[in-house]
Image (cartoon, rainbow, N blue to C red):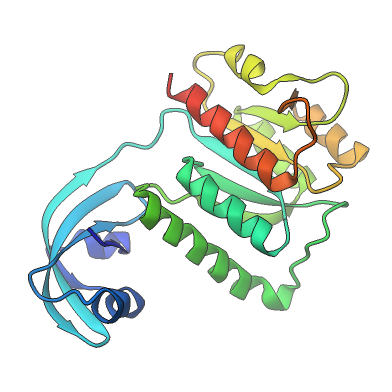
Amino acid sequence: MHRCFVPTDRLRLEAFDLDEAEARHAVQVLRLGPGDRVALLDGAGTLAEGVLEQTGRRSARVRVVGRSSVPAPAVPIHLLVALLKGKALDLVLEKAVELGAASIVLLETDHGVARVPASEADRKRETWRHTLVEASKQSRNPWLPELVGPVPVVAAAATARESGDALILASLAADTRPLGTVLAGLPQRVPGIRIAIGPEGDFTAEEEGILRSAGALAVDLGPRILRAETAAIAALAIASEHTRR
């Protein structure tokens, strides 16, 4: 069944029009018409089923025939990841949705080569949000991660400290322990988990110091040095599995 992303206020209605982009894809690409069923999600925990009532080349009206709510994860996982270039960041955003990240915080880092000029910020954020939405539809994840940043490491560290969440730092330092071991040793009622992943070349010593001062626990992700996008996906997968137990 084709999945459509619908704003929360609209999905509360019994019947509504899809956004033009969603309608065009359903009608012109998938050749759906009146009577066809579609799955609907809003990124805020609601899943619904609808029936197309009227369609045009750029329009589609849907009537809701079933609706359910999915609770948010009991222990949210927040990914703090260095701003990566192009396809690497796209991959991380996509997989973060599939793996159930509650938020994605993009970090401005000294070793990071990607930069977002102020004049490009709005366009970039719209592109990133589109990636998140498409991944949500593909994976049928009813919860769309909050996208934050880019922000300095010091700001992300301060937010982590104030939240009371467990802060995890993927590090190449010698004093690390396996991520699974560290997660297993966390208090049972930890409010959330935040995982910090640096850029290619890792965090600087100063950035790592800022995170450790905020209470970060240093971990490794195995015996090999991983690319930043691989590290982010691996860490999320391990943490996601841990929180399901």
